[in-house]
Image 1: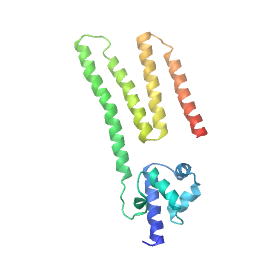
Image 2 (image 1 turned 90 degrees about the horizontal axis):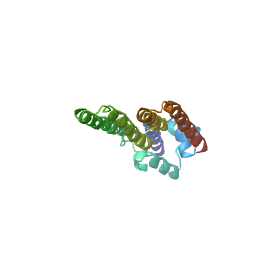
Image 3 (image 1 turned 30 degrees about the vertical axis):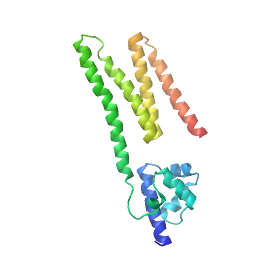
Image 4 (image 1 turned 90 degrees about the vertical axis):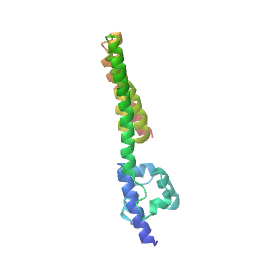
Length: 188
């Protein structure tokens, strides 16, 4: 493999990997502590980074340097993303399946608040979503999952304790989560 082919392979693979992660050039540049101009030059095949930076890029995408410069399309990132989404949705859905079993069990026992099983399922599904979105997806999905958990918890408090101002607390908590995330993002 000559240098021109190496640059072309690297450029093609880097572009594909970045797009599979739904990152723009600026986001990738921030993760690597480079400028978006450098990323653009790499993706256009104008230049290639040094070996240390290639190792960082390979680690970032969980591949080897050989895969990064190979002509073969070794890594199927989009399939990995689809699988992760499927695992997340199935795991969250299991919370509601369990809630349905509990609901019918409580209904058979003639318990009036059987519907609460679905509120608790929503809370547990929110926790599952927080974990998986933190591991695999963009930050915004983790924030939304945390917001869903807060709102669900406030609904449960409102129903059980009759605390009708729970919505005010929930809205304040959601705003605090968003503000803390923005501050942490600015600091980092």
